[in-house]
Length: 396
Image 1 (tube, one colour):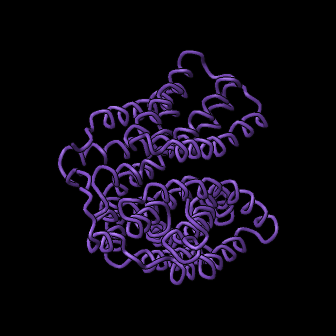
Image 2: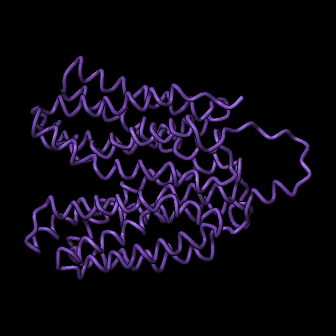
Image 3: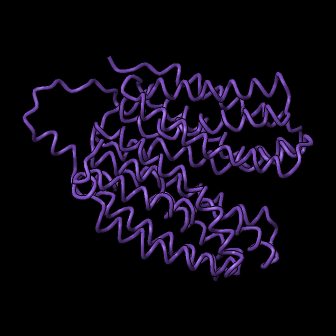
């Protein structure tokens, strides 16, 4: 574990800084729309589908520019790119307050997509990879422990602020947080050291571990695995609780089941942190996806009841918590720390694009087929991810 001096003056300060900024960024940009967008739609006379399409457009833009963000962090550092991301996101939130025309609204969401790409986990992982180099796995795990509380903080805060100052005032407060808290922390407190350079200049006699080249079949399998999995949490976060509710589970119980997702994520990440030395990240990814496949199989075999829905939420949360770590740790272990930001960006791009489309695809499956068919579709994406991870071979 790092010493207090490492946290204050050394590279581990990056984890402390990003732990704060990730909670703020996820809460203000990513988790707030589920509460604010329906209010925006109602006030401006738009359909909810159109209003939510803005958020999906933002994710699509984030996916398209993610590789550029990753390369920029490699070259210029997270202290530059993530500062720009915080300011851009703040401008986007201010834009939502004033964008009364549909075209302006969608344009603002495109701006927010750019800010999102430079503010959330992928940018943070790339920044940690630049600072820590091959030793970034532990910092990534610790950061995801902090990030796991973003929804726990973000949704209640947004709900409280909407009641106190309305959705416009909420976004003004959030824009101020991004400019006055996140941007200065990124600009002035995020370490600027580059571990790769330091490692190369050292006189280490140790043989560097073998790595795969960030192209070819293995790289495509990694992209396909994470992109396939990205469909599942994006689609289910929009529809799962409603599916549970339509089976006859009462609303209060459904909400309670939903609250189990976050703690399950954090618990799984703690376990990964404790046992990580004995487990390759690829093994963690396979185990996490296998757990989710088993959760879908349980629902198919036993049906949806309060007990099975509760078990599914816990298993899903645990799996998602581990896959989030794997998003940062698997590329580092397979492809090395050289150009890590660019690799993360290339992997993140397709995942964000799939994430943007997933809620609409699952809604189409629900409307044209049934809830079980929609769950089967999500299970198929999970199985594809597992097969991709299973086909990847570690470097020799």
